[in-house]
Length: 383
Image 1 (cartoon, rainbow, N blue to C red):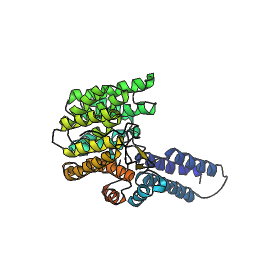
Image 2 (tube, helix red, strand yellow):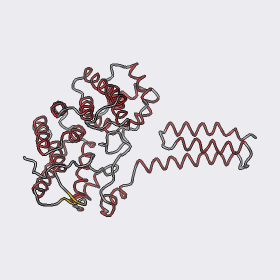
Image 3 (spheres, rainbow, N blue to C red):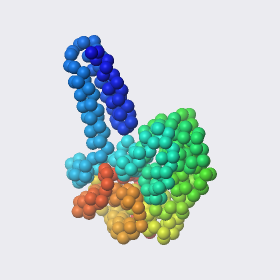
Image 4 (cartoon, rainbow, N blue to C red):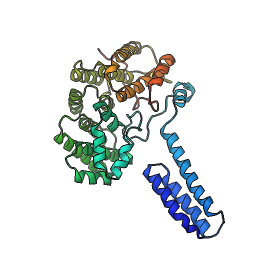
């Protein structure tokens, strides 16, 4: 019997690897094709059953490697976070496009639905989500794995869909990042084209629904990466929190671009406070925690008490208590990203006892603060 009979088996394995969006699929495919070629040329005689077993074994190994890379165990998370000999907690969700996500597992379904063009199933799933779940979906999705061609076909068939325009806006924004986009940097032609498309789709979504929080958040992020002025960012952040005072994804994303100096930190907190207007004190507490992290000067992961830092640390713990008191107003995803930010700052302080409590609350990998701490003066952020 010719060993070429194993090619259908290889094709099935390849299709399954692609269907499951597994990593290293190219390696698996070429390794198995090489085995088949060697057998067909009679370089060795292992038998068809051995080749089939090799196919399935390598596919299983690939699946296990993907699973382990995606979902680290809670014990490993705690060990990495607490063991000071390993430095700071590792950067989280590095494969995710915008670096603010907590766990990608609740968004993976969309990748296959988009690829197969199943708009109705995707639309039904998104419509069944609460605002908090929808926020988590758009924050967690790995846009680098979304088929741009398939998504464009859905847009062509359903141009009235707000969600698909938001998805395409993020896909284009992530394309610009892969091409070298940096906040405020001069844009070369490919990056500028990708950014123009991102703005186009976010603005189209807002024309269809001017109050959609995820379209507003996407536009805010695009403005930040394009280097627009703080006035533009403040306006977008204010409008976003007006429609969704619990939108922590937008709050954290805005801080990346807005909190660069103590005066900007104060302006940022003022915008959040005014927009939230008492409707979600947990959001204000997290915004204050973010600004205090940015205004800390630390060495070897331990903030230096003195030169104003002691007051910042004391106020930060006060805001932490406020968050704990008001966190019931948040959805599970918002709590997840807030707990990750808090776990990061507690690790900076070396507060292992309280850190353990937050590690127990976190689902998925421990996240460090979503960007490098800015170098700013240690002047205290005003109340």
